Length: 447
Ligand code: PEP
Ligand code: MN
Image (tube, rainbow, N blue to C red):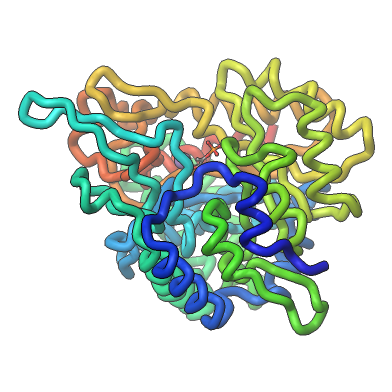
């Protein structure tokens, strides 16, 4: 199947696209992107699709995590290593509790474009209200609040490619070069449990994992899987220019794949059935995701599934539900029931972040740790009651000790947010909150 041209996609009227001022510069950037090598291989995307299919059957659990928005300045070795480390630590705990493989997918190496609820942003500067175009991610414009920085610059699309390439290169080196060694990752978890007051609550489970590993060692088991992990990249495929230029025909299958990331998803704001994003996604062969928020009806979900996965291929489509802790128990069941009753094959995962965002009295965008956990519990309860499979979760987190989400064992409050708030868009769980979440979700998985 050949994919529609960029012109055809734009003719549909794509939402959430930048208004570039210089069409020639944009065309030049797209032409250049089209000549650059793939960042991922179609075969790897197929392999991930199989694993997501397993998650949909309850034979694996999908853990997707990373920044809301990556930044070029943040694409450093330290940052990448810390993010990877915390995701691997979470994965070990979840693997043990779920007794199935955890499929590890980073919101990284490409997560540079953001949909926004408003096209502009107003701040008070020296007593005056100043309104500028909204920041749309480093892929589009600068975070700095100046008129120059907020102008969309097509050169940034090339920078996305290069930053993604270097991040992915480092991730591949870490995950196959010994850094992801299971005993090492478990040792980091043990250190968390031993040395932090929050970690102490999880001593019993850490000790169980310890005994399991010691047993494996005693019997001389040393499989390859102890020393390396499969790790995949993902991002919201938002900017048509970038995603289209990175879509290539796979020589083995003659099918189009988006080779800028293994897994790409459609955001809550661009999932219109007759929209340009759905039209684009319909044609690529990667495993794909689609967000479903509280305004999605059961019919919407069904129509999206039929359009995006007409062959009903397992692992092809993941519905990422993000209702909010308050709404998940009532909002989710009708969707799951209808899709299931129609025999439609999807993997359901929970995004407990985006339905739980609010503005703190101090002006920071935040979430409550308790709401995040509450939505995951609701998600599990709904699926268990319906006899369907909770296939995984998507989180916004970081390996650093930031202060962006309130609550959790460290009892961060609204006033603590200013201490180290670094996210340029949505608040992320910090390192300790991420590990705490993994242990708490592990308890949920065991019940
Ligand atoms: C996101 O995942 O960062 C995001 C913008 O989510 P949603 O599309 O669900 O609002
Ligand atoms: Mn976000």
